[in-house]
View 1 (tube, rainbow, N blue to C red):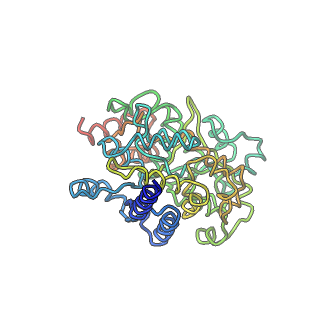
View 2: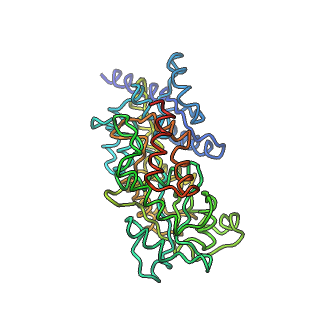
View 3: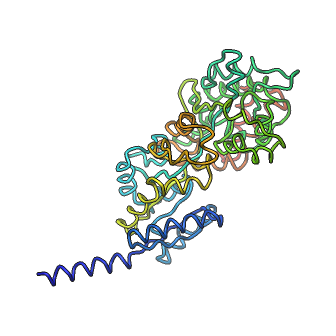
Amino acid sequence: MKKFLVLMLVVVLVSAAFAKITFWTTEVESDRMQRIRALATIFKAQTGIDVEVVPVEENDLLKQIPIAKNAGTLPDLLEGGIEPMLLLGSQNFLDEDLATKIINDFGDIYNGAARMLSNGMGKYYAIPFHAWVQGIWYRKDMFASQDLGDPVTWYNIALAAKVLNNPKKGVYGIILPKKADAYAEQVFTEVALANGARPIDENGNITFNTPEMIEAFRFYKELGKYSKPGFTTVLDALKGYLNGEAAMIFYSTYIMDDIAIEEVQKGRINKFNPELVKNTGFANKMINTRPTSYGQVVALGITKNANKDEVEKFVKFLMTDKNYVYWVHMAPGGMNPTRKSVAESDAFLDNPVLERYGKAKIAEIVGALDSVERFEFIHGKVITDMSKLSANFVIGKAINYMFANDWTPQQTAMWAQKEAEKVLGK
């Protein structure tokens, strides 16, 4: 009997020693690969499971998966944005059961982040790993001086933009994107979704000409009255906020080091305001008829052919305590943990950028993940036509023409409806 037990123990140890998984990551930069390979080395030392880390450009992910499937070399685990994950999940490449189990086991994944990876039937295609969110960054000191409420509701946003707009003193209520680019679409997404408006509905119908969308264009044009003149861009917004000429801007959490770190801020505007972090607030959602936030989630997808036990251990290793913090600190502010317990931990805040904001403000910023949404996804469905509208800058052009030609919201919505129909051949 003792010989049998010894033999079984040897078999288990040998199996562990030869256990191996392949992990494709879209974090291809050399400094990030260094961190990921260090984590893989620690994991192997702890478990005996070898992790082969393979860098894959995100744009190549969807091309490489079918090639790997045909060659029998699919990875066990892959990391990438929600767009490829939802497409791969809908094509039956991913293990929804295991992804759902891991999400449930953690029990503290932000609802909005998980919802964006839903299969629409109570399960999830992949595990939300890290995310950035976009919202309104605003000067709390300016708001306090005028006794204004936080810029969360349409009413408060418009009121603050109007009250704080003082072009004679070189200060604008807001710097709003008005150029035909992706930034304009990102900002308008939050505005539209706060009013229940979408360019394309769940059934594929183009819906620019709806009352909800017309009202969204009306609100956007109203804000334009109190914005810096010209066809302003994302760089105008960033620099304008840093140098004190804007009370509000829309921006992602990637702005956090620009606000907090002297050398980063000086690289943008050649001066540093040490009080800016203290005087900055973040509206982590927008509300008119409903609450919404805008952002991007990067997920971990487990393939159907994966070595399931080993992959589950590795995912939980990556998303737990110091390992998770080590990963997201690759890009402080830009990469935020999707687990609430980690986002609120002292270890996560122990960073030169994040510590300047403090626990309460970081919790408020990352809390936007509870309501994050995108035009491209509804109830686990990928609205593939939306990518064509984005590639043709239909929304950005509509906004640009609305200001350039002084179109009414109705004219703007009608142009966008016809342009979308032309782009999609409908």
